[in-house]
Structures are given as structure tokens and as C-alpha cells.
Length: 175
Image 1 (tube, rainbow, N blue to C red):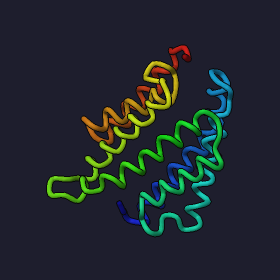
Image 2: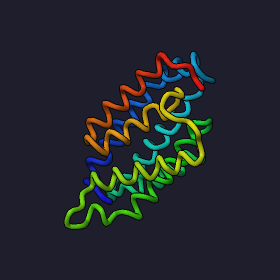
Image 3: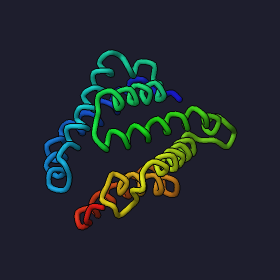
Image 4: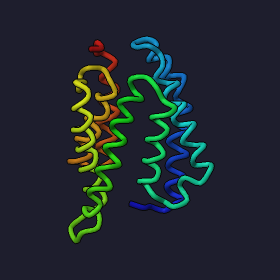
């Protein structure tokens, strides 16, 4: 699964930069409703991924290579519950992408079908390890709606659903 190296590098740099910029807000929000480590945990991961990009991670344009590096970063540098959840999720995502690449190569296949399947399988795997679901005021309030909307409405619908899921947590009590 490869894309333009320049596009991959650009996307990674922007996502990591946005996450690093959001750290103060994430930390503040998590301090109010949790233990306050979410922002720093994500910033640590994003900074480590940027360092890997600086060393040429995106040069081959391999999404699988990026996911393998992300797994290593999550397992070795990120902590907390979120690190555990993301670690399980991204390992399952990479494995599913590798096992189902034929979806993107076949006559009727497409890359979006591959991602939909991989996200669905990753969530199913994650659900074996956590009972958290939509409404529990966790990362699952964004991850589940994103994956479900992606499968029926595409990427933009997935992003919209994730934002709505995150916004809905404002009025929830944590479980």
C-alpha cells in the first residue's frame, strides 16, 4: 500500500503538527475530566513520529512502514490508557491492511474498501480488549462513529461523525 512519498510526508507533518499544537487544550480538557495525561501522551507520539519523518520514514511512500513505526512509537514512548488503546488499534489496522491488500488491487476493488474493512476489523479487535463504547466519554466516542460513517459515506462523512462524537462528550459523564 503505497502513495506519493511527498503526499505521505506532507500528511504526516500536518497531522503531527496539528496534534502538537492541540496539546495544551487536550491536556486542559483531560485534566478536567481525567488524569491530565492525554495531551502529553499524544504530543510525545506525534513528536517521535515527526522525528522518524525527518529521518526519511515517508521516502518509500509505504503506509504499512509508517504504521509499523507508529506501533513502535506507541509501544515504546507513549503511556497511559490511550497509548494502550491506540497500540492495539494500530497493530490490528496494519495487519488488516496487509492481509486485505487484494481489495485495492482487484477489478472491483478500491483503496476506500480496503480502509473500511481494515478499520472495521481493527475496531472489532479493539472491542475484545475494552468494553468502552459510544457514550462512555472515551476515545471510542470518536473512533467508532468515524469508522461507521466512513463505511457508508466516505472520508468526509467519517470526519464529520468523529467531530460530532467528540462534541457529544461535553455533556456525558465518564464511565
